[in-house]
Image (cartoon, rainbow, N blue to C red; front, side, top):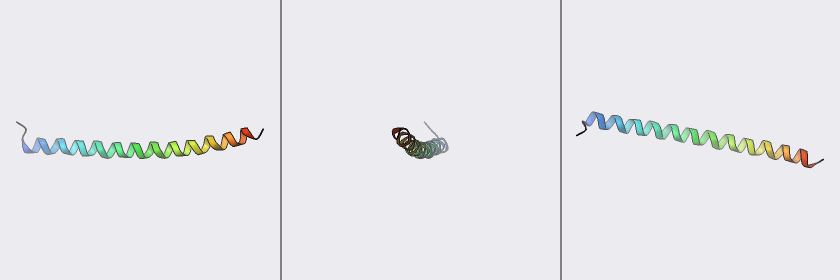
Length: 49
């Protein structure tokens, strides 16, 4: 059986992993939006030829 301290440590690890996952998701979403804007601008420039 798990000791109370070990159980709380596992919960802390899960919370840390959740925060890291949210941060990664937010970063990837921001980068994706930026890349979409960049490629749209490039497409507009190239489409003008």
